[in-house]
Length: 140
Image (cartoon, rainbow, N blue to C red; front, side, top):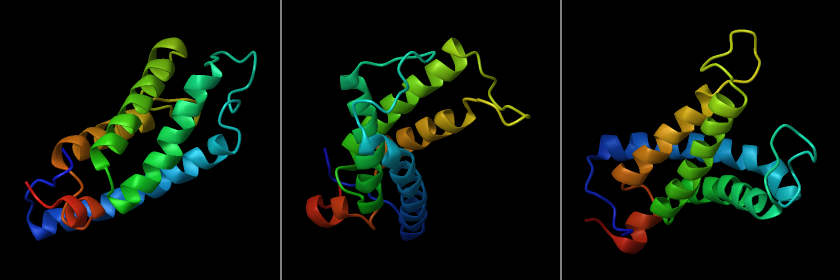
């Protein structure tokens, strides 16, 4: 499950750079949430998740970001991030009725949908050769 698909060096380098960028973005997005993982959503807001789901989202974003940067257990990190982003897309597009891109700077679901797509990429393409998954588990 954790063996890395064979990829050319150029592809592995591109996956590494993308993992670093997206991983750091998730660490930063998750940092505030992980500070109060069971209560980062405002009570009485338009959407309220139970403390359990708030913890899951906080760990997914912060922990998943760290795992992406390292390229460690990438399928699990990608799946967790993908699920979290699918929920974010649902809330922004269906519940909040935000547009795909908001030209006035308000809410939109462009970013979570983009992150969802990137999570799918890592889930199916793997982290590339420049990863701990490759060093620990080898290649397929």
